[in-house]
Length: 637
Ligand code: BES
Ligand code: ZN
Image (cartoon, rainbow, N blue to C red; front, side, top):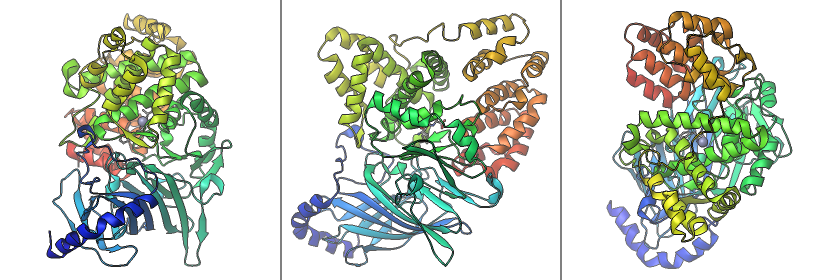
C-alpha cells in the first residue's frame, strides 16, 4: 500500500461508521453477496464484502476505426466500515484516471499481477467518504467485443459490433466487479456513428423496442439505457449496427439488419405465446419487454439470454420454426439464470440445467408432448456423449457442482450442466409429481428472484419444500449423489423408448443394408437428427453417396441437420461433402458447429488438416475472438 493510501485508510476508520448507514439507505435494494465458502468466486478479484459495486453508469463512445469503446464508468459503491479500497476486475482496458465522482478528487489506483485467464485486479483507494467512483478508460480489442467489417454483415454497407459477456469476458470492456454473485443495476449513454443504432440488454427511453435516440449535428447518435433491476454483470450486453425493429406482439419484438428482419420475424412468430406460456409455468415475467436481436453469423453461440434482449445466431432460422426451442431456452433464462443466478460458475448447472428443463416444458405446451419427449430423448443421448467426453462415469467433471478453481469457467460449458442438470430436475418431478414440482420450481424463482444461488441452497430448498423429512423420499431422490457425485445415478428417468420408435427402426433397417429410408421426407428436424446421429460413425463411400443422393444433405438449409451430416462426412473423409463443409465453416462462426468440425479435420494430418488450414485462413476474420482464441492453439496458421 502506498503512503497516500495509508492516510486514506486511517481517516476512513474514523469517519466511515457514520457515513455508512446513510449510504446503505440510498443504495438500491440489492441482495447481499453470499457469505458461504461455496459462494466465493475464484474467477473474480473483487472483495465484495469490503466494498462492492451496486450500480454501473457507462458513458461510452463506440469507435469502429480504433475498435475501441472509450469514456467512463461511474460506480456506486456500498462499503464495510473501514474498507479502504475497491477492487475491480479488469482485462486489457487502460485507465486514464480515477476520481471520486462526487467531489472530483483523484483517487489512487493500481493494477495487480495479471492472470492469463482472469486478467488483473484494479485496486482503487477510497477516500473516507467516497460513495461514487468514476473510472475513465479505453478498451481496445476487448475479447468480449467482436467488430465486424461491413462485408461481414448481411447488408454489407455498415460495420457491426456486438458483445458476449458470459462467462468472464465483460471485464475486458466494463470496469466493474465481474462476478455473477455481485448484482448491479446499471445505465448507459452510448454514442455511435450516424446512422448506426445501439441496443443493449436494458430498456431504453421508451419508443419501439425500447430505444431512446438523439441525433447530433456532429454525426453521432446517442442512445440511453437503464436497467433498474440488479443483474449479474455478465448480462450487460451491447450491439451496434444497421438495425431495424419489428414488433411480434405487445411485449415482444425482434431487432435485426434489414435484410434479415423479415425471415427472423417469421421464424419468431411464436415468441409472444412463449412468454405467456412461461409465465403460466414459472410465474410473472419480471423484465418488462422480451425482445431479441438476430446477429450476424459470427455470433459464437446459439443464443445468449441478455435481459430484455436475447441475442440469437441467424443459423437458427430454418424457415419452418423447427429450431425455435432455442428461443424457449433463452426465454426460460429470464427465470433460471437471470432471476436466480449461479453465485459462481461452479454452479453453472443451476443456470443451464434448470433452463434446459424449463425450455422443454415450454416446448411441450406450445409444440406438444411428442416433440418435447423427443427433445428429452436427444438430450439424454447428448448426456451420454458428454459423460464419455468428460472421463466416463467416474470423471470429476461429470458432477453438477464442479471444481473450477484454476481453470477457465468455459470448461464447465458442457452437456453435463445442461443435460445432467435437466435430468436431475426431471427425476425429482417424476418422484414428487408434476403439480408439486411445478409449485416448487415457481417458489424457487420467487424466493430467489434477483439473488445469487448455490447448489447447497437448491438442495436445502428441495429438502424443505419437497422432502419435508420423509426418509423414504430422501433415499429415493439421491440428491447429493446427483449434485456432488459423478455420472448419472441409477434413479434417472430413461428416455421414452417410443419417442423415436419409427426412426430407430429405420436406423436398424438401414444398418442391415437397406436403402436410405423414404420416410425421411415426412420427418421433423428432430427425427432427422436422431437418424443421422444414430448411424454408425463409419460408413462406406457408397452408403454416403446414397444418403446424399436421396436427401441432398449438402444443400440442406437446416443448420443442425447440416452439422449432423457434415460430422458424419468428415469422420469418413467424404470428399463430395467438402464444398458444403467449406461453405458452412466460412459462412457462420457458431462455436458448437465450428470447433468440433475443425478439430476433427485438424487431427487428421493427411486428409483433414489441409482443409482445416485452408478454411481457417478464410474464416478466421469471421470468428469471434473467443473462438479464434481456441482454434489458434491448433496451429493452423
Ligand atoms: N447462456 C448460454 C450461452 C453461454 C453459456 C455463453 C456459457 C457463454 C458461456 C445460452 O443460454 C445457451 O445455453 N445457448 C445454447 C443454446 C441452447 C438452446 C442450448 C447455445 O448457444 O448453443
Ligand atoms: Zn442457456
